[in-house]
Length: 350
Image (cartoon, rainbow, N blue to C red; front, side):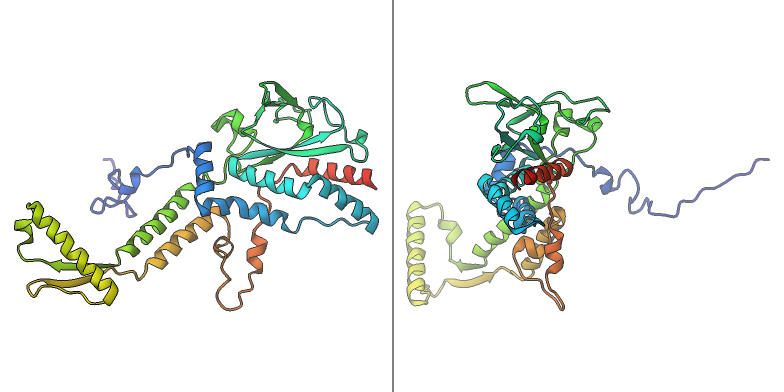
C-alpha cells in the first residue's frame, strides 16, 4: 500500500489574507520601461528645481576642485594658461551636465588639421594646435556603424559619428576626435536599441517618479495652506431662496461688505439670526511627509539630503565632510583617452 504524503505550506501564503496568492494586491505590481522624451526632460529641467539640482550638483562638484599638475611653476603656468584659453574647465562642466541631462554628450577637439573624419594624431599637434573645444550632445551627434573587430581599439564603439550642419550638410567625425561623456548606464544591447547603447540615458529616467511625487506633495501642501482657515456663516432660509437671482446678488453684496469691514477693522458684523464659525485645517505633520518624499528623491539621485536641499548637516558630531565626498564625477569621459591626451598635450606646452 502506497504512502500518502500531506504537504503543508506554513509561510506567507494565506487564503484568508490572500498574501502570496494570485489575489494578492502586490501580485499585480510590475515594472515597465521608463519612457522619457527629450521634451519632457527639457521641461522638467527648466520648470522644476529638483531635476535641475539632480543634474547639476554632481557635475558642478566634479569640476569644483579641478585637478593639480605636479611640475615646475613655469610649466604649470603654461598649462593653466592653455586651459583658460580653451575654457577647458567650463567645457567639461557643460559636457558633464548635458550628458547627465540627455544621456550623452561629447567634447569635439578642434585641431589645426582640416579633415575631422581622419584620426586625430596627438604627436603632430604642436603648441596652440588645438583651436577650440566644442560641446555636442547625443541629440546632435548620430552614431555610425559599431566596430565589431575584437582586435580594434574601438571595438564595441561607433566607427564614426555624424553631425548635420545648419546647411543640411553632414560632417563626419572620427571617434578619436571626440571625448565621450555618458549618462546613466544602459543595459546590454540585447535588451535595448543599439543606437542607445552608444550613449547612456538621462539620470532623470530612474528618478522621475520620485521627483513628481515630491513636487506634487509640495504643490498640494501649498494649496492646503490657502484653505487653512475657512469661515462658515449659517444663513436662515438660504437654500430656499438661492434660486432667486435678486437674492443671490443681495447675499454676495452683503458678505462682500462684511469681509471688507472685517479686513479693515477686524470686526465681523452679522445679523442676530446668522451664525458664524471658523474651521482650521490641521497642518501638523505635513513637513515630515514632504521631507520623507524629498529623502526618497535624494536616495534615488544618490545625492545627500543636505547637499540636495542646501541645508547644514544636523545631529551631534556632524561635520558634513562625508556629504562632500559622496559627490563625484558620475558622467566621466573615457579615462584612458582623456589622461593620455592630457599628458601629450601638456608635454607639447613645456
